[in-house]
Image 1 (cartoon, helix red, strand yellow):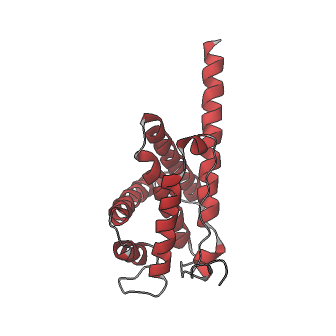
Image 2 (cartoon, rainbow, N blue to C red; image 1 turned 180 degrees about the horizontal axis):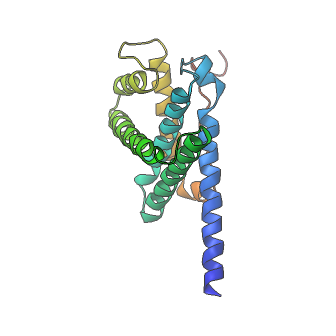
Length: 187
């Protein structure tokens, strides 16, 4: 009888994580990133966007209590499972998948460190540099890096203001990506 309650709880947790990860992927696929911000509409560009949004959610959760940190790990696990499944769908051989997964893990943690460092800085200059390097594929300043950094900062701030209970319900709201800030009311 006790196992029935545990199974039910695990299934609910899995559904919650699937919903959260689904929002991460949906946000990462928003057309504005590819049309307005210059993210390459390639496998690599889409990978970078999923990594960015996964890092943002995990960044928020890892600063919480044990339950929040466990959820962060579960979201990372969902990301890893998605990457594994995607590689297999693309026809990557069974013997090659573990090597590629190791590279994906290294890429994720490298970017997480860069974004965490940039988010800890008060300004957006480090964030714009990390975005230009990792997502836009350039070391040179590009016009969309600053508004992109403003979006990432707004997303991080929104997530920081979101109570854990919202995540626990499987709800996640991220701001719309805008190249230019929306005009204030009355202007």
